[in-house]
Length: 153
Image (cartoon, rainbow, N blue to C red; front, side, top):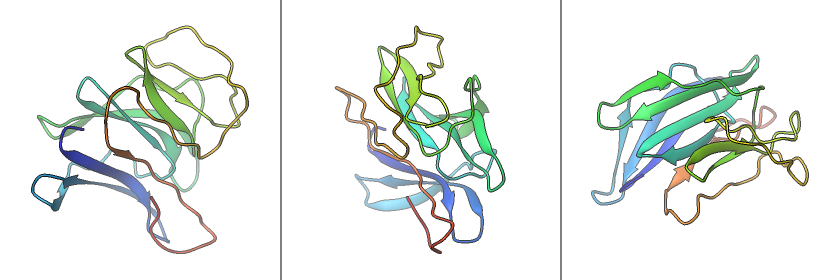
């Protein structure tokens, strides 16, 4: 988003993370910003109207339907409209000015946060990438593998 690349949440080999870091591509530095309210991994991130949307994920015990919205001008997170079902390891993107999560095997229809009409997906696609077109947002989601220790993006 703008000159920043965001890394939200994740897994450090022993627990899910709430930390949020951003890389300033102009100054070549990493900095911590406000953490998300719920520590989690396997969430998706999408930018719409200069706000960062963090959707779903896994908190170490449960898959999540939560949405948090980051406002960079105030460095704050707020709660967004919950997804219609839990999502983890999914992709999300902006489609016609709406945030659209997709790709979770437990639900074969994309959920659209602003309540747009649904279309069936060709097939479930866990841990699939998503791209906002034609924008050039830089987004990194998280992926965890509990069988292998370490940090994962």
